[in-house]
Every structure is written in C-alpha cells, then in structure tokens.
Length: 264
View 1 (cartoon, helix red, strand yellow):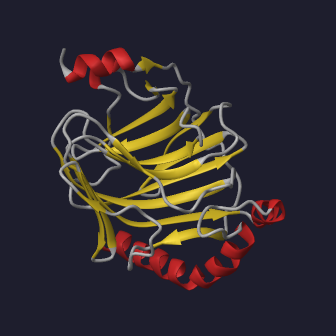
View 2 (cartoon, one colour):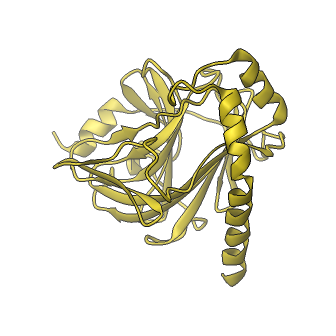
C-alpha cells in the first residue's frame, strides 16, 4: 500500500465552514513567551541522529526530519496554560521532498495526546490545516485529492521567511500568513493546550523566532492559578516578570519586520 493510500485511510475529511471575517477581536499586547533562538536555553529539544537533526545555531532553530516514513512533533519545556493568545512564528522552509513533507506549528495540543491542531506550509507555497483526533489526523483544509494542501500566493517561496500568526479566544481561531488574513474557524473541543513545532517526513526548515502575546486580564488569571509550566518549576507569575524584559527585543523584531515589508 502506498504512503498516499495510507494517508487517505487514516485521515478523515472534515467539513469546516470558514468565517469571512476575523473572529478574534482581543488586543494581545502583553508578552507571555518569546524565543529568538540566539542561544540554546535548554527549552527546545536538540538531537542528531539518523532520523532527526534538531539544533539551535546562527540565531535559528534548525529542524530536519530525515525519516521518510513518518512526521515528528517537538514541544518545549515551557508549558502553555493560556487559552487566549496570539502566536507569531517565522518559518523558513528549506526542503520538502515528499507529498507529506511540511513545516508547521502545533497549537492546542492536549496533554494526553488525544488532540491538537497543526498548521503546515511546504516548499510549493501551499498550506494545510489538520486536527489530531485520537491517533488519526482529520483534514480541515483542501481535500483528500491534494492531501489537504491549498495553494496560496500569500506564502513566500522556499528559502524565504513566512510569518505564521495564530489568534485564539473562547475557542475561536484566526490564522494569518505574513500579516494577511487567511481564515477563521470555531472548534469547541479544546479549552486550552500546548504549543510546539511539527515536521513532516523528509523535511527541513528553520524557525527564526516564536513570540506569544496575551491580554493583561488573561495573564493575571493565569498568575492567580499559580499553575506550574514545567520550566524548572516556574509559575506564570515568574515568567511574566522575566518576559517583561523581552519587550525591547520584541519591539526590535517588529521594527525589522516592517523594514523588510517596505523593502519588498
């Protein structure tokens, strides 16, 4: 049985009605997490093996999945307990050799592994949205004919950075590519979940930075719960104090992004 046939059997096509307008109206101004990968702080997995090469170097997180038969998920030591936030991540796709190859962001990943959303891009200027349901993936974009991949002029070609933005509040989700609105949807399954990276088989890409913002109200609520994040036993309150120092860095990144847009 071919890999494509296996994918078709395991993936159930989902009927999803996308909103014509953005659903999330919250103003996310407060930094909750930031990583520009200038140094290896031990938060992300690093490994060099026959299947994977994950390293932090040259101000980026290099993710290469050498295995040609299966994807791989990577999660940080930091545990996300926010359910209202904006995620910004710049990804540079270098190599996608197979129909299932891709580089993506995971959000709303459940602790027991029973569910998550995955938004991927590939080297052919295509995107795909899918949902993990149990042990199978359910396609939320495109169709089975194209394995869920959708062509998009919003995406930059391989070797160039693509800014992926996920905005969520009260189980509503907005997705943007390079600052341009792509789609919105509502899914009631998850109240919250973790964040990570997803690599398809035979894929290579770099993550230039990952920033997560929330609202003052939601950060305060998270602080009050005093939920440990798993990062050396630190609480959200401690992380807020530390990440307040990252505001200048985040402003600089935004300024640089605006300069790049002007050059284009």
